[in-house]
Image 1 (cartoon, rainbow, N blue to C red):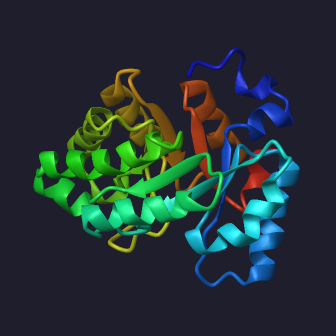
Image 2 (cartoon, rainbow, N blue to C red; image 1 turned 90 degrees about the vertical axis):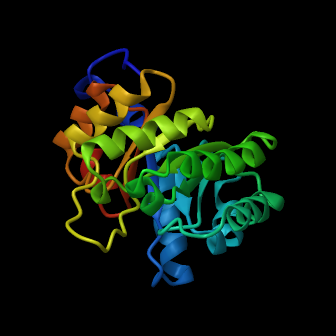
Length: 234
């Protein structure tokens, strides 16, 4: 979306509304999860992005606040069968009021050019989520892709009816992690043609980059728990 004013003129609350605070590290203790989720709530972030097993911990914490729940699905590799992805999505939504589900596309199939498979894999999850009023963000792990594959993956997400295209998991193991560079965000926006919202995630660690992406017209950003204070100027 085009911001109504430059990011540099936005209040902290307006900036925080762009953030899904990431609390996803597998080694986190329950105390860690509570601590970093609470920090995101206190900052007024759009959502706290968590693993499914963290739902019983974080769901009661966001009740009555302006912060929602974003839950990852088939994370971080996206290689489960379509039926398994749908089953996990249904289980996540079954007992909790979540706002967003971030599903990892099968980016190996995307690299193979199997675009029909990628689209239908996403579509099955989108249909299950939309039936319950949950938004779907599709992670295509852009660090594994060429520019052409990034744009093809974006078009798959559009065709599948997803709400957002998202760059990275933050857990890529196949090479250098560059995350949501300006160039990657530009590629997703260009391919989306305004038909899908864009979430940048991965390596957004300083305020300058954060503000640049807002001014570009990005819709949401996944920010690691350590970087939220930095990008908000705390």
